Figure 1 (tube, helix red, strand yellow):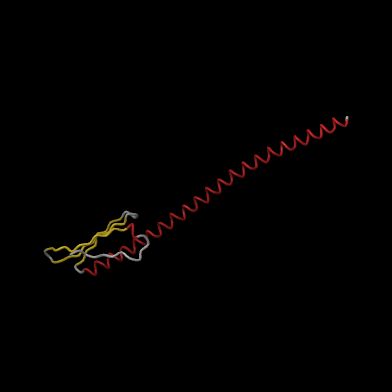
Figure 2: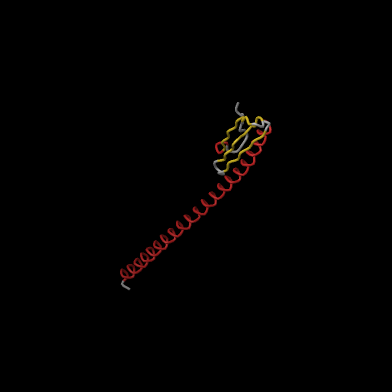
Length: 127
């Protein structure tokens, strides 16, 4: 008979794998469970002579790992947000520099154009 372990009310159940079984030994019956958290890369073996105690230990370990995983995911998301903001800021600086350079070129063209108009006007006036 297997040990029925349910995973409920946790942050990301896709990261946790559990297997449980009833084992008959020379000392009697033991209830064993193996827990694996893929994201944290952790494995834990839990056993007891009482199936309810084994389930409670499994549940407690899952809650602990789930909280650690949740914090790690939040930390990674925050780091990604900061990196995106930094990247966006850098892109805006590059864009601002390019626009400034374009404006300076246009300003120079307008200045030369006005200068040529003034020179042409003086030429036409005979000055």
